[in-house]
Image 1: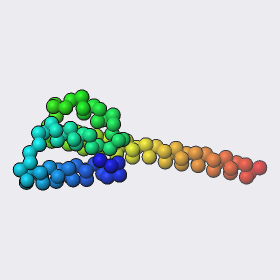
Image 2: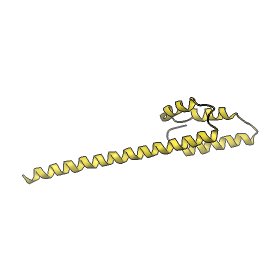
Image 3: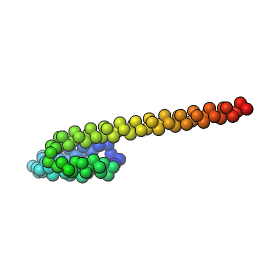
Image 4: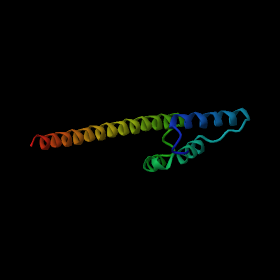
Length: 107
């Protein structure tokens, strides 16, 4: 799955594909479907993919999708937190530089 697409969109597309296959009476084993889904995760998810590969038959497809949605939410929250931290640091640096420049102007 490409990194550009949202994971939820990718899950929905994958689910539609599976439904289309079922409508054509093409049934794939759940372990196979889960394995393909894991492999189609973006490259940025390689560590997570490796963890999932180590427990191939322990998760149903529904559980797997739930885990992926939770992981995606955690990644988004972490990214937002890091962005906020960078913004705060940038503001502190700007504010510090502004105060230094004002003290030089007084002389």
